[in-house]
Length: 244
Image 1 (cartoon, rainbow, N blue to C red):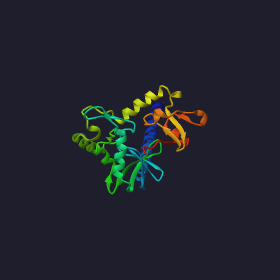
Image 2 (image 1 turned 90 degrees about the horizontal axis):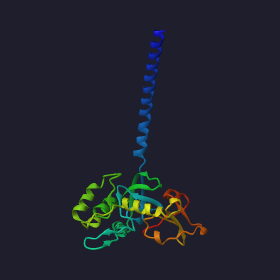
Image 3 (image 1 turned 180 degrees about the vertical axis):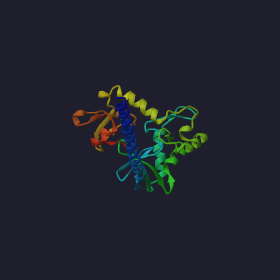
Image 4 (image 1 turned 90 degrees about the vertical axis):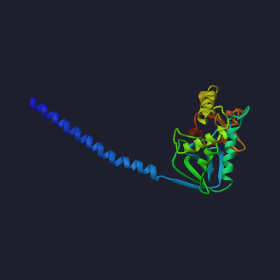
């Protein structure tokens, strides 16, 4: 009886070892394929760019989110060096337009976000637009996702330019968005705070940090509606409000 038990235990150990070996083998075969897809899926697009806001552009209908940076939202204000505040979000959009100056923009990306936007590094005549925005003080290095522009941010802070002008701390764009979203959710139906407006310009959705958000009223009788997230709005055929 004891010999049978020992034999069964030995058999189980062998089976377990074989299973582990099989899993390891399959992992080694699958993992490189995933990594290869991630690094070989570079997408590139070139052309005239439409400015959406300080960190988003559109080329040939393709929406590109500038990788590694986060600019103040268009409706956002920042403390001034002296008194009051200045419209840093509005200024960020103007700065991006100034850098591009109607020239051809080339963007390269390796991934897309949950809204289908290409996450890209963009260039004008060889100049990295993303880096230029951070260096000029019109965007933060988005270190939550990438520290590639951390050096440019240190330069901007040291030079006290743009959002680093005042001695007072500036609320980062991601905190500003969070605050605006939470505030809008309190009065939005079912907490769905994105406004889907219909106008002569088409079906346009407004996020809580849009400069026009508070001025837009939703009339469901006209087909206007509320959305819970951007992906839902895009899927329904609405487009984001533009800076221009």
